[in-house]
Each structure stands twice: as structure tokens, then as C-alpha cells.
Length: 313
Image (cartoon, rainbow, N blue to C red; front, side):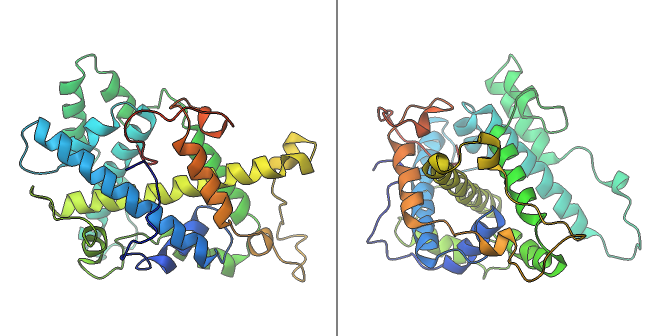
């Protein structure tokens, strides 16, 4: 099965259409993403996660493990230090969230210095990285408590896009946006929905998968939505490049400050054209038919790489 192909006959699509629309808006799409585009994105995520599960099962079999745990994900991410660091940051943040939930709320002011500086999951992950890479390169690069020696250009551009969008919002729009940004495949969802959605078209794995494993899979699903939006915006930028001669102007979103805002005119977040099905389709086509280099996904001519390619790896 080619990476990121869309299964038009999938019987488990439509479960997360509204949530995917909110996630797409959270990553910079219009306030009202197209339903058709969200449905396509959901199909892509489903295909990607099934491929990811197959890869995890292969890794688990090779290392003689009877369960899928953090180490299987680390092995798959070892060739991409930037995304490996993102994943380790996710492990650290989940520990912070767990600590915050355990707080009884009796304190008026939260002392963040009391937060644990070493996450058990993170330290275990870093120890495993040191085990598979004695040079400690992966361990040093992935450790989110240390300054990053690598540039995460994709994350930087994503954050800049979101900053430009939110700077044009008023207070009410921003509050609505934050709710959309907090949407995920697991948060505030019925227990077991994510598992049922994923396993409906996939036979249940014969290895153990605990709650942590399913949460990590939902993180990769969330990251896949982010990558789809990122690549679709690059396609849009390429398609509109001929309409604007100045490179700076082409990539700048109009800003509206509270001091001179004209409330009679729609802000950028309301007036922008939502991502189209054709833009997402073209982004996935380019991703599937190019080399694994940093800039190759958006060259016109490419050679399909061997094996699987996943957006989140």
C-alpha cells in the first residue's frame, strides 16, 4: 500500500470530520474549513496510522517485544532527529499535564518551580536512545531540556502562520480559536472511540497496547493533520506565486491592530479561502512521489522512494 494513499471505500470515515475541521483551523486554515477537505484529511490520517501500526508491529517482532511501547516509536523516529525531539517534548508535556491534574486546585497561584524537572517517560526514552546510539547524538538532540542544535523550520513556519492569523483576531475570535486549537483525536472524546475508529478496518494487533500507546498514536494522528495543513499551504503558495512579484509580500498576512481595526471589514482569519481538496491532493501527490530530502517534496519531478513514507515520521 503506497504511503498516504486515500482509501475511498473506507467504512470508518466521517467519525472525526468536525474535530478535523477544528484541528485544521487550529493549524492555520480558515475558521470554517471545507467538510470535503476535512473528510479527505481524515482518510489520509487513517491510512497513515494503519501503516504506522504495521511498522510498529514489525519493529516489535524484530526486538522480540510482546507489547508496543515508547521504544518502538523511538526506533521509527531515529532517522528524523527534528521529529524525534518533538516526540520527546510531547512525552515531557504529558508528564506536566499529569502533574497539573493531580493538583487539588487549592492554590491561588501555581508555583511552576514545583513541577518535576525530569519526566519519567522522557528519561526512560532518553536512556533507550543512548542504548541504541552509544555516541549519544540522538540523546542530546532529542532532549527537550537542552537547547536544540537543529532548526525545526517546519514548526517555525507553522507557528509564524498561526501568529499572523491570531494577531488579526479580536478577543472573542481568539477564545473560539483556542477551543479549536485544543481539539484532538482523544481529548473530550468518548472512551474507546479512537481505538474503534482505527481498528474498524484493521485486525486487532496480537500484541499488547496500553493507554499510553493509544495516546501516542493520537499524537501522531494530530501531527499528521498538522503536516497536511503545512504542505497544503505550500501548494497554495506555489500556485499564487505568480500573482505577487515580491517574495516578502507573498508570504505576509495583513495585520490588524486593535488601535486601527475596522470592525466593518472581515479579519484575515474570517476572509481567507479555506484549503481546497485539490490543494491537499496535490500536496500528498508531491509527498508520495519525491525523494526524502528536505526540499524535494515540492519539486515537479521526483522518484518514488522505496518503502513506506509517513507524514509524521
